[in-house]
Image (cartoon, rainbow, N blue to C red; front, side):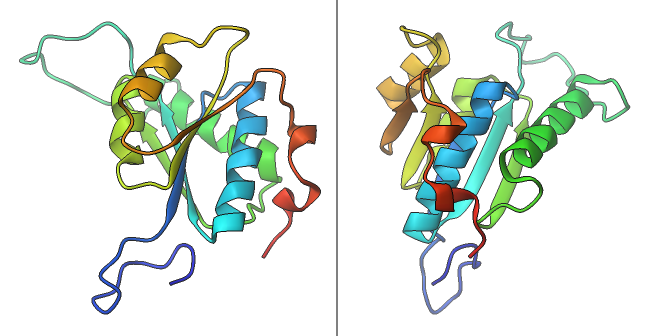
Length: 164
C-alpha cells in the first residue's frame, strides 16, 4: 500500500501514519519538515495536528459551541495551521498530508490521533520539556520523537522538501 491510500478490504490494514504536533510557531516549521522527511522515508501519510484547546476545562454539562466566524478561536487555529504548512513546504508537501485542527487540550488530541501511528513527532522547548511533551512521552502508545529546541529547518535533509 502506498502512502495516503485508504484502507482497502483486501489489505485489511490502516495506512502508515506519522503524526506531528504543531502550534504555529516558527519552531513548528522545522518539526513539520522533519516529520515530513520521516513520512517520505517510511512511505507514510503525514498527519498534522494543531490542538488549540484551553487547559481550563469546562463543566461536562456546559454547552460547547465552536464558531468558524472570522476572528474566532477555531478560525485563528485553522489559519495558524495552514500558515505553518505553507511555511514548511511552500504549498507543496512531499507526502500526503491530513490536517487536523482540534479544540481539545493538546495532550488528549495528540494521543488520540497518535493511536496506531508509527511515531509522534514533537518539538522541544528550551532545555526542559513542557507539560504537553512530558505527558505525551509518558503515555503515548507509539514511539515519540522529541526534536531538540536547537534543531532548525536547516537540520532537515535537503530532499525533505522535494516532491515524490
